[in-house]
Length: 260
Image (tube, rainbow, N blue to C red; front, side):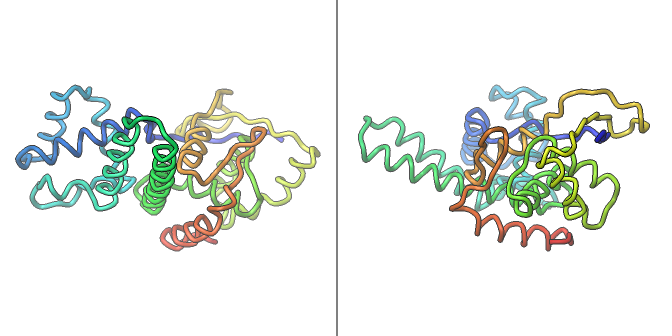
């Protein structure tokens, strides 16, 4: 089976250790400085703190999509209102983890770090949920569809992710359920899936074979948030998070007016 899909985009930013450090930096700079006159002034200040212009341009929209900060649609720029409540909670957890890591190694220290990491994962997934609910976030639907697919079919691999993109581009109303027969044949090794990707504006047939970076981006974020695990190239839900995932799918699908 040959399929041609548009190469999906992604922000290329996630909660790496470096990004976590920058979240702490942004929070600290907002707390210790007088109100900035505008978002532009904040960006300039962050550049003076060592962040390059492209990085600042990418990280702030990502953090806003995830609900860590909010700077759109504000009449007056106030530093104290930029980091959201969930953003403050995440900052507090990150600071607590840094403190605990500096403690002498012990069983108690390890237990505390384990508990803090679970809290961090919960907040992480809540941030991804906020992002998925945002209709203006063009990559949010890719995250949601991966959750919905695994909920329906038990697991997902790269070829199945490409099938989602292919079927969605055909504007099917219930495109995930429409894949049922193809997924069954693929998993029974009755068919092979050969994928070509194209840019969003390419004419059909002009696609060139190339790797697609959004699948590891999406699944990597889900694994870091503790809701997915990878086994032999396939991604499954973590059993102890399934109820939480199901509630999220229901909530986000309703928000986006999608078929559950």
